[in-house]
Length: 462
Image 1: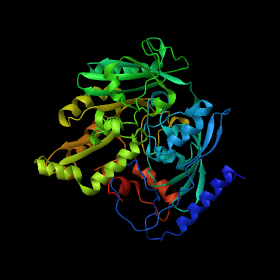
Image 2 (image 1 turned 90 degrees about the vertical axis):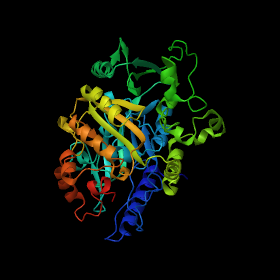
Image 3 (image 1 turned 135 degrees about the vertical axis):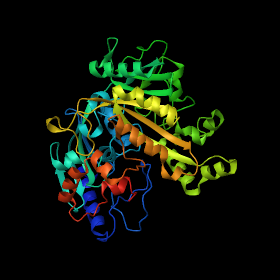
Image 4 (image 1 turned 180 degrees about the horizontal axis):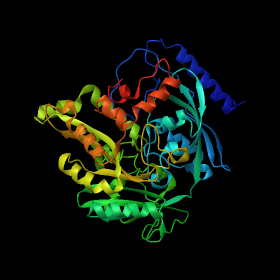
């Protein structure tokens, strides 16, 4: 007889608590997991980690209420596999398959529906958090723990269960790629679509884009549809998990059609465009590369091997190239400051393409902002994502380009995500991410400071 999913969840939480008790009082408390979507190095530890092996599934989907009960370590790939057969998806589905729901909520996530649905934590109705005190606390919007949890990156605890809202979706997504040669016009178009929810009289359900060059920028407008014949000149859905590459299609065609499933993972197959670093976009290599291995977690493992053996750095030294600085970041700036940021980024960093994705935070209960990531509710921001390396020379390890980006973003009234390397001094960090408010919540739920602080995690690599 199959075990009840709720009983399985209860048993998994009990194992988690037992693993917490087994960690020495003077050892850091961390998750025992072999995969990550973070791009910052952690200090080594020999202490055992928290056992979250039983917290990787979907407990229940309620199609009538459009809600799901989900465990914290469940990947969005598994979550979508459970909800899509009911014609439902989470309100925001981050781009990469192996991002976990708990990770997206505590570390922030974003996608093309964020201009109308906000960020993943803003569709959470309730969650259980395993705190630094070794207790499971059920928390809801408006509670101090709930409102401080987004962008806390495990410094307050780990979500074990989340109840989330879902939205109804059809089988297909119709795409229109709009080209711009002027970033200011693109920013105005983003603002107009965000305000009205439509473009030229047609509803827009998803909105993101790519800036290839200063004079070549695209917005992709996505419209949910059940009509497979609704896209001119596209008789059948396109397949970008095979020989074709999605990001290049923006430059090659104005209209497109994808299944809902393929739309959700359109960026994962080639890790946006970063798969090119491993040869996966070379037609010959691509034919030999198994389709099931064209996915972001495979590229992440290859990247880990490169870091372990310094492959790229050795090749650079052999070729006499300057030392690389890794510039892997996502930032948000107010939509009206987007052209200024892109112009500065082109001149000072010189990395393209970059991803652009509008978002509007719905805010916490009562319209307040979120404690540790103070976006103004109701204001339109644009996320700019850029992931690569820049040859800078012997001071690469000091992060000069990353430091410049941090300064520019906050000069423009924006914010930077903390999943990658950060270089702030403590005073600046606490000012930007409301460190004093976070400290109050942390003292309540982690009084012995068993969990690494947010600053130590994200800046000191603790």
